[in-house]
Length: 113
Image (cartoon, rainbow, N blue to C red):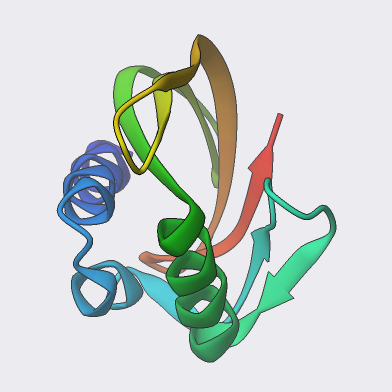
């Protein structure tokens, strides 16, 4: 699962850089992605793109992986999450858990654990 850990590290860096296209390369086209802002899930590359575009117009999130735990095709990541308003005011500074289910070498499902 070392390859999956490396891919997730790259996806977090791309997210923090607001590089949606680089993120989508690591996801299956039919990815199911948790919508942490509005609830539920978004589906597919366009769903993720639209969700993040909306999110980044409202808040400035940063997520940094701290550790990875692997169980079969599922990787759980301890993440340091900092969310600020667009003017820089701190909203959230906390540890969260993200869970990724892989199909092949790509993310199939993302959940907030």
